[in-house]
Length: 438
Image (cartoon, rainbow, N blue to C red):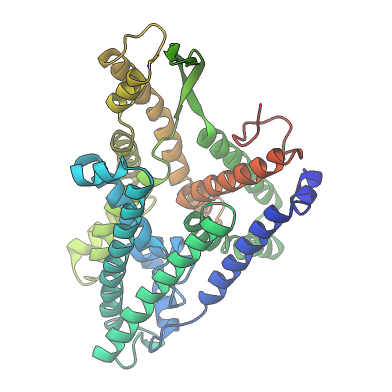
């Protein structure tokens, strides 16, 4: 592996891509410390770090933007408006003929979709920034009001700063995708999440030195982290291969087809989306309830839907499983897959082309989605048990871990492809990195 790492810097093109990606990520992290004018960051930090707000929408949002909301920086919205718009347009592509047609038009259609995604990002970013600005104007803490001088000027500056910050992040992500290595948008989210890990491990080590955490718990936590991370890698890469045979076709003097291949159906086709949807659904009523602290009903809602409560955990798991099936059904169309196979002379051995093939693919998807959804539901609720059992001082597991593993694998696969293409050894001689030729 160390030889492979050294080989990376022997390939000028790959070295340039990696250094360019690193430079863009450094710029992103530096921009995370540029504050929005007129905000008392101490008051906002106290609110997000408060005992009663650990499970609301703001704390979850702050996790994805790498603490930028807590610092009240110009990147406070992060890349989440772009992600939200992309998911919405992707879902619309399955139900609205206009977007479905664009999706099938190839590069030209994708260019139009990207354009609509940018417009949607500006709209959602403006809507979110207005909501945050109005919320901040009414926020009080022991350090004083979050906005010392509220009014239209503050509202205008905050919206302009946050929307501009989101567009800058989107541009940085596109530059990484075009000139760097890996998916730029994913790497920016990745950078925001792992930025918390060093301080978290340092806090855990300080707890060990202070005697708050004993050595056995410390070692057990490290072992659990390694095992859980390896398990997430295994399930993320897990696929169910459906064999496909293509019949020979004679076109002019050339013979096409006749080869055997397979359709790789991922165990977790929906990725991290079901967890995000489930968190949003459960945290929305809890977040609204935090604004009515004097209401007994609101306090009961906060108590029932608090992370770690039995009802919260049960609903969380059920919603993750439901959204896993829902999102998989939206992004994978067995009927369309069967029609494309039939069009090009492909068939699944033992299955008739057309409806029977579609039903078979749908049955396989139904069966493999359940264990994948249950596993990721376990990963999603794991931080709650880690915090209670080991008093872990940082958020490990859940959405963050799945995103970190997925982005790491995708980036490593691209680097592996560059190494193998230029006749260098990859990272692993045995493994399932898709970039490696067999």
